[in-house]
Structure formats: structure tokens, C-alpha cells
Length: 335
Image (cartoon, rainbow, N blue to C red):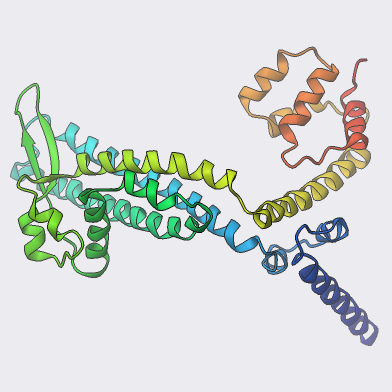
């Protein structure tokens, strides 16, 4: 037991020294190859995060990825709200949804839509906050933002989120217009009621100018166009103007993944795959149906086909000449 404790202590000290070496190593951009090679020996995710957080590009890369996730969430919330409004539109077509017998169903539509408005307005506000965290690398950020979000609807949506989160869960109303073949349904906010029951500050002027009810679908679809236009410009712009430290951080992450993948595939093709193994029967595990269809159009066991398979599977550029040769051999390349 004493010997085991000593071995454990020695291994722990070796690991500590390795991690300290890596933390110091990733602080200098570009990170040296010897540091990248040692990074491949770090297995635990938490341990790797602790080391890579010392890289100068870690923080900004995290902010960009956070914005990407928030944008995906925004569009999911947007789609969910439109789906709910569409469901009410279908349910209201026969004219009986507002009758006493369907009160519970109407209440469910109302509750579901309020929930989606809460989620979507929150997602919109989060986008605003997270976009501000990356604006420093885009000089024209504010100019383009104002061109896309220059009106009261943007201010109202953000203020609405603040009301729902911190003040009161505001009431909204349904309305049916053009009863008959041209009937439309609407989930609406009445500006006078919002001003009376809420505590709007930023959007007060906008609400005071709204004589007609604010149609929720029209509000968020119009706002969605602004979001689409702005982020269709911003996200590619961020990638074009990435600082050198972020590029190097991503290079380090990719290089580590490539080293791990290369080691795994070399082990797979030298120790696991046998001469009698039919690798084509395993492709469905690694390729999508569309990719499989493309592969099957190429000459069977040809170099062209195998290079295309490698290109599809090799996400991180792990395949070097030695590994490519092992793949050719395992698939039975016909030269």
C-alpha cells in the first residue's frame, strides 16, 4: 500500500508539472508544436478547459460561440411562437373556439402563446447582450446595427422582456377579423393597457404612438427580418476579422483533435480491422444517407472513392500519408 501511495504521488506530480508546462505554453501565440503534441495527452474535459483558458484567444472565442448558440436558440423560439399562432388559427376556423364549451382549449392556446412570447423576447434580449460582447472587433458594428434596429419595435421587444422578467406577466388578447373565407386570427397587445399595467420606460414613446393593437405575429416576423439581416452580416464578418489569438486558439483545438483522431484510427486500422473485415458494411455508421449515395456513384474500391470517404469523415485534418495508406489497404484499393 505504501508503494502504491508513492506511485500515485509521483504520477500526480508528473501530471501537475505537465499541466503547468501546458498552461505556460498556450499563453504564447502561436503555440509551439511541442505544446500541441502534449495537449493530446490531456484526456479530461475539465482539465483541458482549465489549460486552454490560459490561451489569449479563449475568452473571445467563447463569446463568439455563445452568440452563435443564442442565435440558434432565438430562431427556435421564433419558430415555436409561429407554430403556436398557426395552431390557434386552425382551431379558430370553425367559429366555436370562443364558446363556453371550449374555454379550457382557448386558455391552453393563450397560455402557450404567452410562454412563447416570454421565450422569444428573452432570446432577443440575450442576443443584444451577447452581440455587444464581440463588437470590439467590428468597427462598423454600431452603424450596421442602427440601420437594422432603428425603430420602436426593437425597443418595445427588449422592454417587454424586462417587464415579463421583472415587473408583471402582461395580459394579451385574441381577436378574429374578416369572419368567413378570409378570416384571420390575431394575438394582440393593447398599448393603453400595457402603459397602464406595466412599467415601460424605454418603449413608452413607441407605445404612446400605437393607436391600433400590436399584432404579435406581425411584430415578431418584422423583427425577425431585422435579426436575419443583421446577423447574416455580423457572423461572417466576425470570422473574416478574427484576431490572431482566436485563430490560434482554434488551431490548437483542431490540432489536438486531429492528433487524438490520428492515434485512434491508426490503432483501429492496425489492431482491430482484419483482412477479412468488410469496411463498406460499416460506412453507414460514419456517413449520412446522402453521403453514402454519393460514395456509391464512384468506382468501387477506387482511389477516388476512398479519398472522398476520407474527406467526409476527417473533420480535423487527421489523415496523414501513413494513415491514408492504412485506409487504402483496409478497403482493398484497386490500383
